[in-house]
Length: 83
Image (cartoon, rainbow, N blue to C red; front, side, top):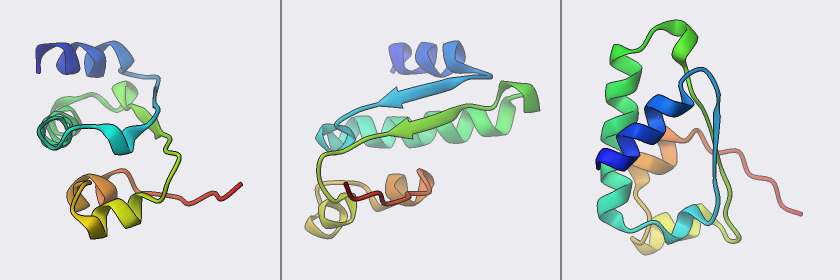
């Protein structure tokens, strides 16, 4: 959890690219949600983070299958791009 918090603080005011997010273990998904919520509550406006996540499959299908957190899915404000 400490390294995730360090990543959030290091990214303040910038962007983070997370690839293969569908592979993230459930426990890490829950930690990420909590850290993002905490950061949003305590940060200055200039320290906002742009979180960009990528996946090779449908996150919605992973949510339906129970392998990806619906809370994180909606927290990421998902935009679907099919190439």
